[in-house]
Image (cartoon, rainbow, N blue to C red):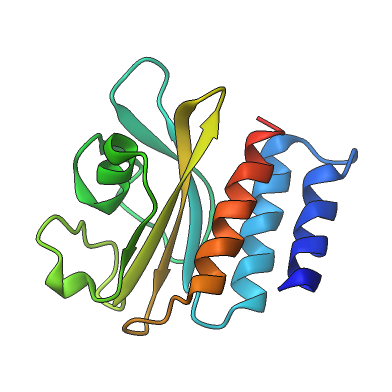
Length: 149
């Protein structure tokens, strides 16, 4: 994980790319390096609205480009301000299905100046794949991402 953190840091610190490009590169790196990360993307607060708008991502196209607060796992994290790990999406009543292949999901909020401004959302085609190391990595990453936003 420390090697992956170094590579993620170098992307975020790169002076050659704008924020959107950096976030796209982060998604690509996570997708390539962690086999059970099958859809990796960012959602951000949509202006003053109580909704999220899709940012850079890697994976199958999604219909969920706008997600109201409270709806689905991403919408719940926008309200709860806490990381949400879903080992089996079929056990979660508030799950918004993006793909029939998705079996598990982890969503980690991004805070800037104490405000929840977005999140990273990762879907997996494997039931219960996410480890404590994954959670720690993603929480670290969201903290690092907040510094470039």
